Image (cartoon, rainbow, N blue to C red):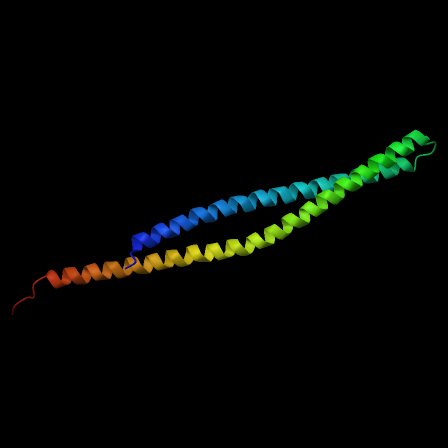
Length: 136
């Protein structure tokens, strides 16, 4: 027979598990935010270098240097965007799993409350059965 205490402990165990996954989700969100910031920073740098390319009297050495930097920035942006896509997919997958775990914890808590109430009623009935009947 399931008891309220066992069910409460199971709910607490699932709650701790849920907290671990929430912490992982938070780290994932932080990493996505960091990648978004870096992608934005790379775009800003690319715009600044493109502005440099429009300067008059640009030497060939400066032009080659800017083109090399631009290629490196393109590579960095592509890597960051691909990583962000992977993390975004993982975040969506994790959101579904977190919702399922939260529902499981909630249902265990509700079940524990119901079992506790049932156990209290059972105890009250047993105590009532032990009380002698009044004689008239």
